[in-house]
Length: 202
Length: 237
Image 1 (spheres, rainbow over the protein chains, first blue to last red):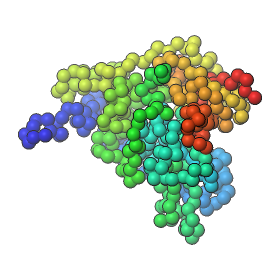
Image 2: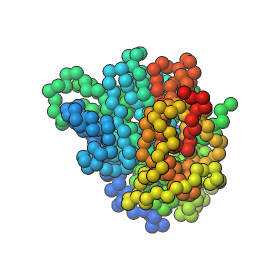
Image 3: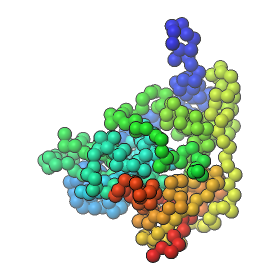
Image 4: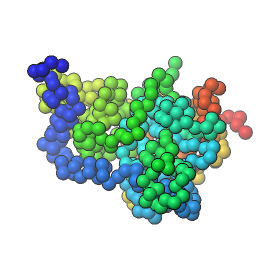
């Protein structure tokens, strides 16, 4: 694009920035929305929600066998006990990885995801590439994403087609025996709870 | 030929490339994505209030808007443009006027209308206790028609309405492995035909049954299906 071109990025009416701003301005003028509430909602999603909520449940289940059992048996009750509430967790099921079994979550029809446990989903989770391929060739997709599974490991894919939301309980890596709840929580990534990565000790 | 006519129903479709994976992806890439998220939560109470209604709005987008270059938040913005136009809040021409561009850029110019779904094609409604809070869950007094271990098949249909039955399991036998709490039926609520609550079955499919003998070995795909989607597989033991 040459200098002096009128259609530089900042004023292109089809740029996402300009279209979004125009839409927001119209909505404010019509009294349909309140900018302060928009700001507050963004703040909450960006800073208060996130994978640390799910990670704490995973870490606790590694430390307390009874908690793990309850979490796998009735996650809804555990979330109630732990006072975890929010969007997209009306009914939650936790799927535990174990030697020989690996779980991975997708939503092929849209991008359903346990927001209140993991925050907003990453772009790749919402991409057509992931949504189409992980049900047809999960072993290959996981390998491309950096996770090589033993060929004998059974893969269980969970397609979130109803209002049930799934969270993977990854395996605890060796070398973490001395770590406490806080330190373990730090190790547990979002992607390990979707099922596309394993938790590493460091 | 596939009977798939739904832009969003892409599970198992072929021809896609590598997953655009970034393990360190930020929550938002651009500030406008933040605004779209924040706007959506205030726009929906004025527009798509029923379960499944916003999803169906996205499903009605033209493919160039559904798979738009602006990604997922671009799709949400396009969905808002459609809803705000249809509900009489922001006419599709009004946004173009504001942008100072010729009419035709708003997603509402290209989206399909809400399909007319005949309520007779849906299972009958049933009375359930009204929940105290807003929820899709319902308490059904009737037990599920299926049991864990049953072999079931979802025939599906080619109606253009909203459904949560993925194309890729249609006509294939799977095994009920769990029964989830009952929910309102999105095929009905999205079209304003009432709750028609259903038990929800988790059905496990072998990859080789879905994709053929060349499929990856030891892969099971679990799909949640509203009970009215399936019937017992004939001749199943």
